[in-house]
Each structure stands twice: as structure tokens, then as C-alpha cells.
Length: 216
Ligand SMILES: C[S@@+](CC[C@H](N)C(=O)[O-])C[C@H]1O[C@@H](n2cnc3c(N)ncnc32)[C@H](O)[C@@H]1O
Image (cartoon, rainbow, N blue to C red; front, side, top):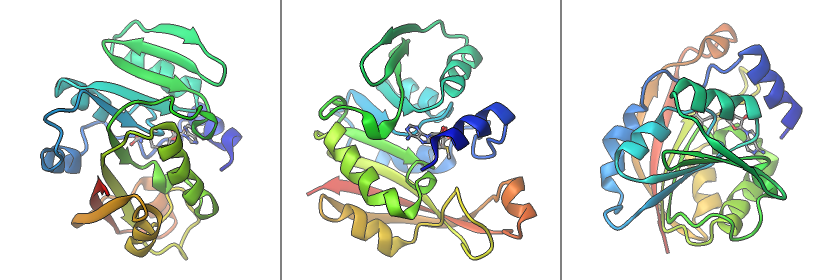
């Protein structure tokens, strides 16, 4: 995972993954999670996703993690929130209105530093190159060992047409990665929009796949 590339992408505005509306699958499938007792949700590799606003509107504390300062600053600015910012050893903690973002390398977050019992992964796993995906899942559980449930949204398309990210992550791989810890339940698969940059490279259609993960 090349961190300078992400900084450059944000600087140059190459953020086709960012959506100006809430994710429809989040709205549709979040109620299928058993979140009635949950107070906090983890959003790894959160960018400036509006989905954090929707999750906050459900009464949850939101804890995002994001590498790029510009993404974090833009999130709070665009939401007219004035964050408090504190420096810790491996990350900077931003927070306003119970939306916390840990700015820094997700892979460097200390063990047990995240307490949320639920996570929401949209375009996080699929942003990670294949060689690092096991490390991503290991680190998710190392930093947030109390995770009990998650909603995971991936994409599948012909990876021969274009290098990711986003990477196409097939169901078999999702099962291999998560099934040591979670029951993997496929909730939905539907065709979805391809960003302009993917379309330019010949990807006209991709399938968005939604999974519910329940800790074993
Ligand atoms: C494809 S985007 C998805 C953002 C968000 N989940 C969304 O749905 O809009 C992936 C995000 O992960 C961030 N990122 C990449 N590597 C990271 C790392 N090692 N630690 C934390 N964030 C990272 C990028 O800066 C980018 O904002």
C-alpha cells in the first residue's frame, strides 16, 4: 500500500470513490445488524465519507481512521464542525460531535486502541492491495479486538482491465480472510456505478457485494 499515492490522490482531487450521498446499501442493510446495544462504530479508512454522518444520526459514536490529513480536515470543514485535535504517538485524534477520526497509518495503530464492537467497511478492504489484505484483517482485530459484527461492502469487476484501487475482491477471498473470526453472510450483490476513471479504462459495470460479518 503506497501511502504517498493516497496523499497525492487527495491533493489532486482524484477521489472518485467519494460519494455525495449516503451509501444505499448502508441504509438498506444496517438494520440487519444486531446493533441495538451498540454505542460505537468503527469506520476504517474512512476518507471524508458522508456515511459517518448517517451513522452518527443513528445515535452512534463514530470512530474513523484515515491516513491523509487533507481528507480529515475536509470532512470536518464540509460538515461545519469545529474539531478538537490532539496528538498521540502514532496518530492524531480529531473529534467533534462524537465523530472521532484517528489520522495516521491504520497499520500502525496500537493494539487494543479501538473499542467499537461494530465496524462498517465500504471501500476500505478494496483499497488494500492483495498482498496486504490479510494484514488488514489481522490489524483490524489487533487494534479493535472487541469487534462482534461488521457490514462489509466490496466490488467485483474484471481486474484484467485495470489495476486497482479499487481492487476487485471476490467472495472466496472475503471468506478466506474473515472466516477464521467471523461467520460471513452474503446479503446482496447488485450492479453499481463505475467511477469515471474506471469507465475510461473500460470498466463499464461492476458488482457491489454486501456482507454481514458476525463474530464466531
Ligand atoms: C477508497 S478510499 C475510501 C474512503 C471511504 N471509506 C469512502 O467510502 O469514501 C480509501 C481511503 O483510505 C485511506 N487510506 C489509505 N491507506 C491508509 C492507511 N494505511 N491508513 C489509513 N487510511 C488509509 C485513503 O486516504 C482513502 O481516503
